[in-house]
View 1 (cartoon, rainbow, N blue to C red):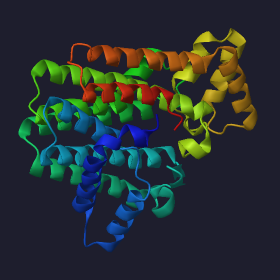
View 2 (cartoon, helix red, strand yellow; view 1 turned 90 degrees about the vertical axis):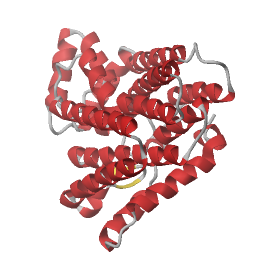
View 3 (cartoon, rainbow, N blue to C red; view 1 turned 60 degrees about the vertical axis):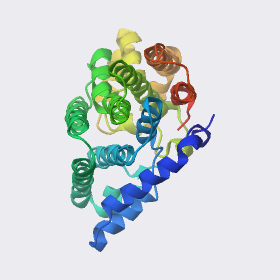
View 4 (cartoon, helix red, strand yellow; view 1 turned 180 degrees about the vertical axis):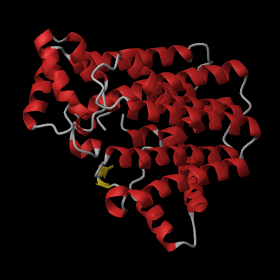
Length: 324
């Protein structure tokens, strides 16, 4: 199943989310509006708003507050991507030039701040205090994860548990909050809200593991950025960590040298690929992601069967099987 088919039942709601984002970011400042329009041309998968909408539908229904929530969630996500691209010196995101390569780092930092500020303006205006509190806490956690990831760049000693903590904070926390707050707005039963929260957490973990795995094996035309760009920039993700844990002493020493190198040669990537194949690092990472998806599905086992529950379960499978 492709994403368009998966989100077809909620396309009207997602279009309203897009309209709300556009209205919230609209400004008389022509320079800012130019960047807003540029970002709109490279809109992402809108997974977080979709999860909020589906969770709300399961618990009762979608309201104007749900649409505002979806817009705020997406703006928080986009803000983190803008700042990520600056830190990583990324040139391409979603098959087009990043803001920092088009307008420079200084303006891009401020645009990321503008996106954060706009999301909180919308939340303060449209959402109840308890939901705002969850999202404020989540944004704090995301920032903590981003800082940890940056701190660990070129760290050949990063453990698997440390890596999992980073992705829990920087990615899974927002997936989980999307499900929780969508359910909260629909006044879902507390046990249902918690079940959806744990579902979001599980698929968020799986999503990031697959994302990091695609950095090694994905097609550039699909992923929207050069393959191995994360590894090139010193990000230690699960396939590389697995190779370091599995390698012989000689292999590990050479791989550590490659990891620590700020400038990597094509032969370095070839050597890493040989270890990835030898130690089945891609299979290992995909199986880890599948385990998170199964955990997410189990979180929904106590929920009554419905069309919405089935859609959520399909979402979980999609995040594992995707190639972008």
